[in-house]
Amino acid sequence: MSNLVRILLAIFLPPVAVLMTNGIGLQFFLNILLTIFFVLPGTIHALWLVLRER
Image (cartoon, rainbow, N blue to C red; front, side, top):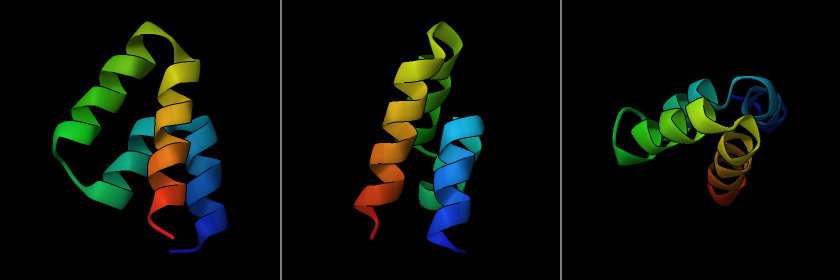
């Protein structure tokens, strides 16, 4: 999938971007937890994971 699509998903739907990048695992559940508490940490975490895969 295109990196641009993953980056946009990381901004607007962080858990979906993490799911598509890493699958279901620790990072996915951590991102859901971060997104539930505050959206910005979940977004930063998702962007970090998506950009790390490059």
